[in-house]
Amino acid sequence: MALSNRFVSMLTSPAVVATMGSAVVLGLPLLESVLVSSTVATGILKAANVTAFALNCAAVSVPGRIDGLPDEEMRRGNMNPTPQDNEAPPLPEPLVHDDTNSSVYTVARTRTLLRPAGWAFSVWAPIYLGEAIFCTAQLVLSDTSALVSILPQVTAPFVAANICQSLWCASFRPSYNESGCYGWHKYISVAMLAGTAYALSHVQAVAISSEAAAAHWYFLPLTIHFGWATAATLVNLNGSLAQDSAVTNATVIAVGKMSAVAAAALGVGVTVLQSTPFYGLTVAWALLACASQISQKIAQNSQQDDDMQKAAAVQKMLCGLGSTTCLAVSLFTIVV
Image (cartoon, rainbow, N blue to C red; front, side, top):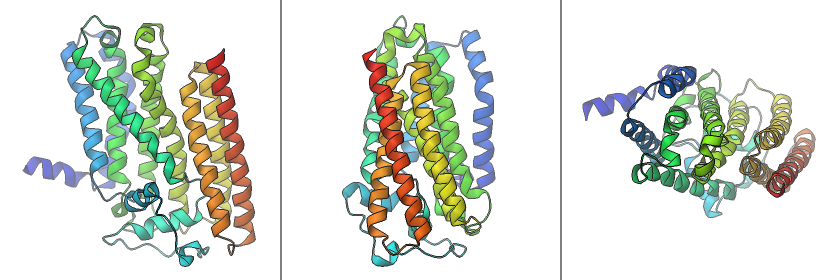
């Protein structure tokens, strides 16, 4: 118990979390090569995958993230901002950490131009259910099955993705903003999501290989996870920028537009190059949710300054166009 408490307390240190995440991402290629070239027992690989997924589930279940309470309300359809929330605030004063996460989240929620509507988070249900099946199948299938036979290639990136997402859960908290809106701590969560997407891209490389052809359905939730982590990284980046009082509205607007274009480009590019339509469909889902949220933002923030209102209108168009393009390319990939 003492060791467990000590480990949990370590995760409140931004330096420790950043170092752990960097080590996981930088060490991934080496670990992949070791597992592929060596004869590690299949039982060890199975145990590593199941343990990493269990760690991820445990980390996600710990309350207190910045998005926790507001997102719970949005998922219930109860996110109805008060008139004070709807007004465009001046650049925020340095935030003082307290026992709630509302102040940190409200600033980002008001300024950011890339935030999905609450219904978009329902994507986590098929992701976690599918990945639970992915892990369970490894335990019940024979060692000669198609899925188990490729565990040496998939275990390192799968474990890395789950560790990075667990570290994101540790870093996306008000305590990482205790020093105010300044500093690099708030961007650690962005890096951890990027690490998750990077690791899942390695899983995807295995999923589209000929060796995985007979087991490709097991990788579907991981492909969806890859697409969502890609979009979530950009969303998290925009939210972190919006919290920073040193960042002007003009910068928030510019990054929001570039992020929408980048998400669409990645959705189309990865879908076409890897013939993986579910990646594009997931990015289309995320961009559609962002367009939907911006529609509400425009309607609610009628008193906001003209620059932000115009920017929101352009952002809605970019997200809508990006979503439509990703959807069209994904459907075309399925048909052909």
